[in-house]
Length: 129
Image (cartoon, rainbow, N blue to C red; front, side, top):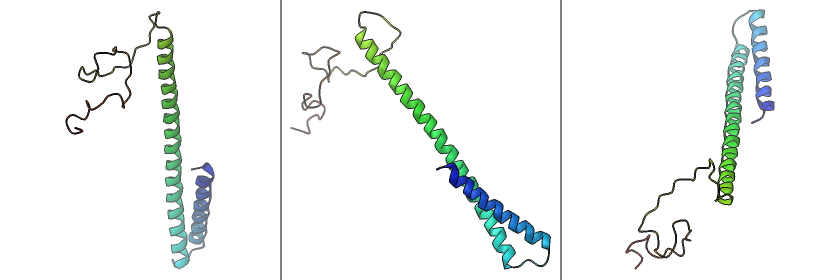
């Protein structure tokens, strides 16, 4: 959503409100033209407000998304730096991981990774046999 559409809706709303004001100042009985001007003023004002709110929400979401991306980059950089500086104790805190004794094979260390294909049927139980 861009500011162009919000401004365009606001200009149309202003036009309808001015038209309604001119009709009201001229006096006379309320006719169909008055109804059209009032309906256009209300509708375009509501559209302008809704588009403005949507634009504000999108901007806010974009800021949150950029902040989240920056946080993920910081986390990955800290994990990379911790892996490279294993001999130095830093302020980097490793992510907690759930380790189940049943999932770890006795032949591998606690820090080694196992691919999904190497796990075998341990995660499926007796359903795969």
